[in-house]
Every structure is written in C-alpha cells, then in structure tokens.
Image 1 (cartoon, rainbow, N blue to C red):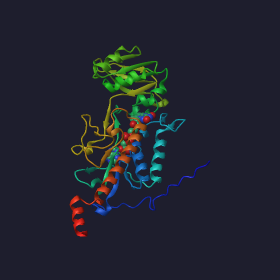
Image 2 (cartoon, helix red, strand yellow):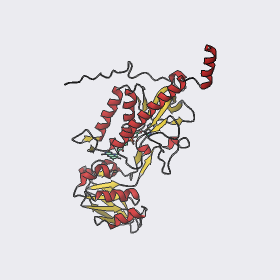
Image 3 (cartoon, rainbow, N blue to C red):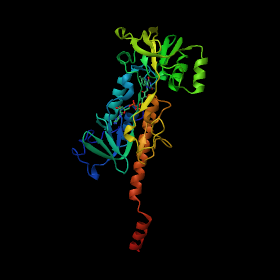
Image 4 (cartoon, rainbow, N blue to C red):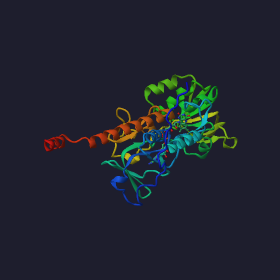
Length: 355
Ligand SMILES: Cc1cc2nc3c(=O)[nH]c(=O)nc-3n(C[C@H](O)[C@H](O)[C@H](O)COP(=O)(O)OP(=O)(O)OC[C@H]3O[C@@H](n4cnc5c(N)ncnc54)[C@H](O)[C@@H]3O)c2cc1C
C-alpha cells in the first residue's frame, strides 16, 4: 500500500534579509537560534538538519565554499551514488538541499567570534551576528607541497587521501611524500592496491612512531627514497600523473621516478585559529568534543574534520554535522524550557500570592 507522508512546507521566507545593520550588533530580537560556520559536508549537513527543525540557520560558507571535496574528482565512497559522483557536484547538491529547506547562506568567512557570553557573536565583513547556539564545521586543510603541477593534477593522480583514492590505483605504482605517521599509514594502506609504493622523504630518517616505521620498513611492497624532495609532478601536459621529478638534497641530482599516483602525506591543519583561547583544543589544534559534539563552551558544537583527526571522511563529517545540529536543537529546547520554568523562589512567591 502506498503511504502518503506529510510534505515538508518551506518556511514563509526562505531567504530572509540580513538581520543586522552594517557595523552594528542587532538587538536581542535579532539573535539567531543557530549560526553554522563552514560549508563542507559537516556544515551543510548540520544546516539541512537545523533548517528542517525550523531553526532558520545562518551559514557562513568561508573562503572555500563546498570544502575539501571540491578539490577532488570522483567520490566513490559516499553512500547513495552507485556510480561515482564528482566532489564539486556532490557539494553543489548538498548546498542546494540546505538552501531548499531555508538555510541562509553567506559566502564569506567568519573573521572573529566571541564565545565568552551567550548569545555568541560572529563578525564578518563589518557586521556582527548573534546566535544562541553555534555549530563549528570549519574543517581542515590537507597540507600540500605548494607546487603548481601538484595543483593541476590534484584529482588526476595526485591525492591527499589514501582511504579515499587508494582504490583507483590497483596494480599501479604510487609515491607517498612524507616521513611521519600520516605518510606511513598511507603507504601501508596503499600496498593493498598498488603494485609498489615508494616513500619520498626529505630527511634520512623517519619522524613516524617506532611501530609505524617498523611496519612500513618490513613491508616488502614499500621502498624509500631518502633526502629527496618532489620538484615537479609529471605530466601536467598529459593531464595525468606519469611520474615525479625528484631532487636529492645531499647531491643536488635530479631524477625522474615513474609512477601513476602521488599521495601527499604530510598532515592536516585544522581551521581553528579563530577559536584559540576560547575553546579547548587538543595539542594538534583540533577542537575537543565531549559526549558527541559538545565543546568546552555550552551552546557551541563542533562537527567534521575540525574535531576529527582520525577518520577524516565526507560521510563521517556529514554524520557529526548531523549530530551537531541535533545536539544544538536539544540545547535550544533546554534553554527554552529553563527560561519558561519559574525558579523555586519565584514559584514559592507565586504560591504565596495565590493563597
Ligand atoms: C583531495 C581530497 C580528496 C578527498 N576525497 C574523499 C573521498 O573520496 N571520500 C571521502 O569520504 N572523503 C574524501 N576526502 C575527505 C573529505 O573531503 C573531508 O573529510 C570532508 O570534506 C570534511 O568535511 P568538513 O565539512 O568537516 O570540512 P571541509 O570540507 O574541510 O570544509 C570546511 C569548510 O569550512 C569553511 N571555513 C573555514 N574557515 C571558516 C571560517 N572562518 N568561517 C566560515 N567558514 C569557514 C571552508 O570554507 C569550508 O567550506 C578528501 C579530501 C581531500 C583533500
């Protein structure tokens, strides 16, 4: 039997005008229920949930609308897409879904935040916005080499995520740049697919933990190129990776190492500079979360890569983005309940009056 479900009704004004005047802080009546920082999978998922809970979220997209997935090509591990979907297409669809339910999007970064008192304040482009709950989904940035051929071939043989892209390199030769735990983990993981993995490291010893080093060194499919840096990724002209030009820092000699894939494993930088001194961060700068997505400040929640140095996947970011919206919704309900509940003293006073 066909079931008829109630249709979602769009809020009367899905894209309300900004509530604050230029340079001013809005009145208490202008205070938002929830502001979301970030438009990667975490922020947009949080927006979809918050909008569908009638919280009229305001979302700052930041300097990179769509987040990290916009710099990759095929995404094959995001559920729901039997065939691969291009990273930028997935993010476009997620953004449209968030907008459809009434999320107001501002394509700008939050320049500063004040989390010392509630409502919280977010400043951007000379305006200050206030909200009772704040969801932080500012993500992280994969550290890259910063050479132009790397950027040109990103998603075309160059990657910063072995879990995401290793599968594309079955029986092919791949290179991993780095000497820390990230690089060793990526190299070991890639041997499941690649015919051979060469680790390129600028020093003559690894920085990785002993256990990770031992695993990589003992792996017969991994070899090392010491004291070496990547000068150029070949071949931008062909639109795919055919190898890299490597310089030996001790001899100055340059050689070409043929390969079909290049993985940059030199770590990630969480986007948390804005919150330093206001939120508890871990030693690597990730936001610490407690019992879900709560941060050290009540009413401030964090989802996605900004609080996750372990999984760093689109689907886990979406998952914690959803959790952050649900946690924010519950927090706002509790706030409302607390403000409607008379204090014991007021209740007693009220009781005396009635008697
Ligand atoms: C090359 C590459 C390929 C990948 N491929 C895959 C894959 O195939 N499958 C997969 O599951 N995962 C993949 N990943 C990982 C995936 O992209 C991330 O796990 C995911 O994007 C994290 O989402 P996020 O929302 O937490 O943060 P991000 O995607 O990092 O987004 C952060 C957002 O915050 C915004 N922002 C930053 N600072 C501010 C500010 N001050 N104010 C407002 N906004 C701000 C940015 O503009 C951005 O929109 C890949 C990553 C890379 C780098």
